[in-house]
Amino acid sequence: LVSQMYQFQGRWHTQALLQGLLQYQKHFEAKDSDIILVTNPKSGTTWLKALVFSLINRHKFPVSSGDHPLLVTNPHLLIPFLEGVYYESPNFDFTELPSPRLMNTHISLLSLPESVKSSSCKIVYCCRNPKDMFVSLWHFGKKLASQETADYPIEKAVEAFCQGKFIGGPFWDHVLEYWYASLENPNKVLFVTYEELKKQTGDTIKRIAEFLGCGFIEEEEVGGIVKLCSFESLSSLEANREGKLPNGVETKAFFRKGEVGGWRDTLSESLAEEIDRTMEEKFQGSGLKFSC
Ligand code: A3P
Image 1 (cartoon, rainbow, N blue to C red):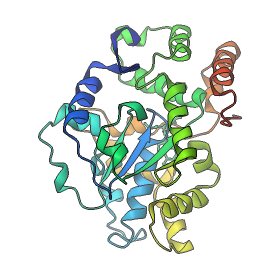
Image 2: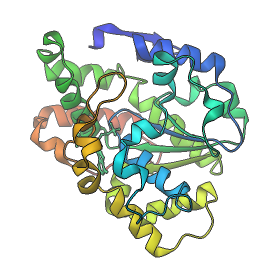
Image 3: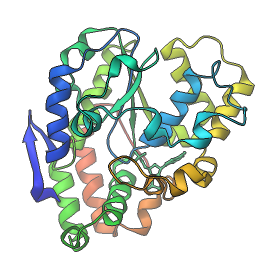
Image 4: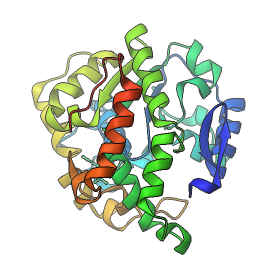
């Protein structure tokens, strides 16, 4: 619920994620070899986690092998969500993670722990067009909803989103910070979009591989990763249909439609226009555009 969010360092957070963030800012020490996946909620986090996990582990776990970890484990259980882990399991030992450590966060660039910014660790940022992301979060919220949340009007939610009240947001600032960082420091931040991943999954995997310095990757391996991590494949696995995360969220909640432009089923024309108008105003002059 937007009324139960807190502002810290100019960004909005739920109480739980803010508590996690404070611990994470205080205790997390980045290593040069770390890989941090950054997304806004509902922007393809689960997919990106699966793709990068299978990419960096392809020698240890060949993608076509029948006992690949992604066939039996939800990606969120393989890759820690930093502010979530600091909130739920403050004694989690990050030094135990195999190298390179792969982790994810929703935190804005401005609130990242100092060591993430000063080390040579790599950031892969995945952004999704705001209308699909908003709609995806809207449906996710309904699934997890209390009665109060379930009755919240979508018009008010769109208004709050456009005005900036959004987990980790304003969304617009979150995206722009990483967008400019990727232009200024392309060795540190790679900016990809959900839409690119949908349209050119293989080529985007190759861009990520090059950015992470993963060495030569065979076309067959790229094809294997695309297939293993596809919506159809992941969403049909028992681990993702039947599982639960330690916080009780059902893993199937992370798989809904997996489409580009699906917002049309949920947003009226005027609500879509409200988001488009805000996007144009906020992204004006940045070179960043979403045409879906
Ligand atoms: P929809 O609700 O539009 O279907 P996140 O992982 O950041 O929570 O994002 C969830 C969104 O990504 C959901 O979008 C979900 O269906 C979609 N998604 C999950 N796995 C995917 C995959 N392998 N390929 C494409 N989209 C995927």
